[in-house]
Image (cartoon, rainbow, N blue to C red):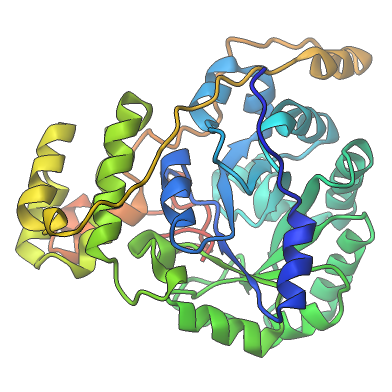
Length: 404
């Protein structure tokens, strides 16, 4: 088993507090919180990166799902793996499997998609704080104190905060390292402003660090969120996707950032999918290319070399000096299913591992975020008639994007 250097997440929060500042965090984003993008944003001031949300049951049961949903390398730290789980066996077993390769795990309790809620995941968990507390408490008791255990939730109500505060205090009592609160309810779309007053009250009610999430598009936005809510960390999704250098203070994607992404993708080679590579170029180039060129980029044939040539032709990446970025080869991760099988056997269940695929395939379609960008360029025909049904926008409260 290849070893990774561990980072103590709690020490990072303590250090930031001593410096009277906050941690800058890249959110778990479907399709996009991959190893290569995590490498990119860390070079621009991101303090902690999350994986995409991973279905814990698939992760435990399927080697194929593990290979598809999680990759890492020696430089991929600080890193938190986010799982969707609705029972202790899956969450604890998935945590044990991924433990050697991450600095913490996070439980997703904010996904409002119908497919997830119907199976008892995401926002459906918010109806049973006792269940959330059981999952978090069990994992906390079974993991070293230096290993971060956290949870991501949403507001239960935008007008009556007592229930949300009571829930957050109940989760804090399980011994978790920190929690993230998205400042909208599951039913509210991204057009509804984040309820910063609610985030401020929740922060005041807790003693553990709180990360604030929602409507963060620039470093100024993050600083204002910190000042208004006194949060310990700020998490960005849409903003950092369009501008991976936002936490470094850049107001738009620097050309040097595009060149870094080009270098990372070429080094990663077949480890990164065409879809992931292409979409990131599309998002980053919003402020760098006119509409006509963006339409051309979005509709290129599925050939990586054609995308690379297009970027070199229409964005002056060669005018930028050496970007000196190293993307180490991914680690070959080894996972033990022993504890998982034992726990299932104790319940009288059989572990049919190896043949089960991932319950959610993040590569199955282009996803609503990319489709929405095509729509902005006059390609309305690319937008699904029912944008909440493909599962790609599950991180958003009924809108087109993520948990933003």
